[in-house]
Image (cartoon, rainbow, N blue to C red; front, side):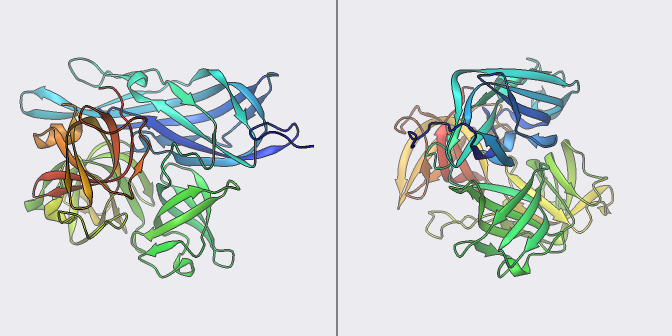
Length: 435
């Protein structure tokens, strides 16, 4: 007996990947949440849990970019609702306390609560493998005070849908940062404890590229790694590329730069994620001062084309407020005076949201001038509201309509400072979020 494609089979399971994602207009720099449980309820009233244990998730960096947080098996069937239980919400944003004075605001909500999502169209689980993004609608979830300040009102709102693994509506790959917990070179697999508490297993193959190491045999438990991954047809995670940050690193933190003082080799970082052995000097969220070691190394998290019409340099002198990066050290508790010292600095991809103001070409690239909202950190911190975005044939266009002046878009990639001019090398494009 055969079944139509997409038809659930009673008594059969599908491999499930639960991902975290968000839809953000760029105002928040950080939004973390302890996700206690995620359950689906089917037509018969039976519930299925998608999380084996609570996880702390930072949602802003997943803006349009679903990131696996759990994997398992789920009974095939039709589900009518989801219940998400959460607590300990934290959010940060930047604003003016007075003309020309920018302040970092943070707010916290601590009580345990559950929100229910009733599906307008039932969610169907079928086939060998499925993906469900837990999509946080940030503008609806965090209400900011009109005059600024820490009094943020939280009311998390989510959207969920089931997607086949080969969905063409999502980026082909996502980048995970975390600590290697186990390696099996014989089976070409590694386990990663991500910076957002997920414990995931990745397999490698002949197409996996490596940076900082020769191959998987050089990966050791305890190392911090960046893994570019994609869900495969059988539900497993393939490591498309693996970058070892620095074998000596024991502590890392990830965030958005809020200010840079190159003469003193210092910056302030809006911390969103952290992991390591001694994080006493790094807050779990909020702003923190960082000092760069005299021998600090600077790197990018993925290779960029040498054919770009500008030089995509990344070093101390090209740091720019608004960039997302990770810092690492053998011990971030060691300090220069009162500042923790970073030995490695890695530029990470990020999502920007704005309206296309102009379209030009430069060589093989289409260049979109994206006008950002006044509250966007890149705009707020650099005294300018536009970013030049470079798109080529390798860029994934996931937008629902043709790109043109006036299009509201989210564009994702590495943000460089070209002599103070922000330029983003884009790897995917999606519909934007209303400002």
